[in-house]
Length: 385
Image (cartoon, rainbow, N blue to C red; front, side, top):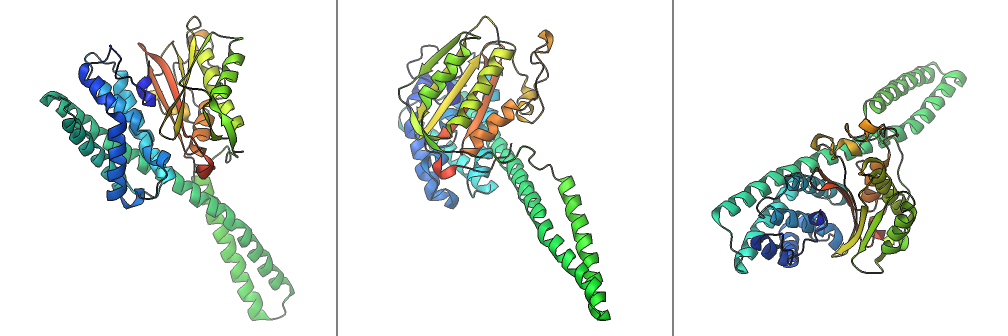
């Protein structure tokens, strides 16, 4: 059940093929070898904090490995694209990478993976190698495209903020020039003052037009109050509250799962996901909450059975005032403002993390909030949502 989205496939899972299990057993070694080589070869990666360097790679690797299990769900292909997209988006928000660096590090990942699999005697036939090559090449493009899109959104936000801030000194300059024009007896000074007024009015008009044309953030920056939080207990409290309305199953790798986050913001984000699962999921099947950890990162997964979110809606559900086109409409469940999932994404990104979504008829719908275990260095990170 979507364990690939958190990088927690088990090498002992009998439903996985032998080659998938062998790959999963090497996950930690391959991700570590990749990070060492990336730090050596990509200048922008040298000083990256470990949880930022790791990014979504464990989940991406597990999803690649799962593709080698015959009869795998088509959902895995969608998952692979979503993970690649989140990887590129997080690189745009949290690093000084350029698109070339994103491509380079994924090429290094491909080379390291095949080298380490061969070194540890994991057998891949020609068809399996070709399939992995093709999917990695496709997701390199997806990561680079996502990086470019998010970087453009961040540039728009920067330009909009700068244009907004320019209006205050412009207004001051205009008022000063008008004062000179009304009080000075010197014709030359008054003439120059008139030119200043005309120029500042023109600049102000251009600034207004620029602000009108830019799709600037409409919800304001999220303010985080970072403190020490036990994620296991936080999620347990959310589960207890939800049990009054729906059956909930909770799975926690270990307790406590302590880290540094904004507990209130994370609580609201998880509650949003749980409320969506209650609202749009199968009323008879339990909601499942899982808390897991990887190297210096923590994942909170919310899963429900029920009608899937269509692949074409996988991004629009994270946009303000938008909902997936088929969610809940048949039963009149489509009411709502459409701000819950954008808030979840903004909270995850403001902590330096990401949020992933996977949905299919066979496996239901899963959302994963993936965060650095210590968000203090990244608090208030830029958000593209």
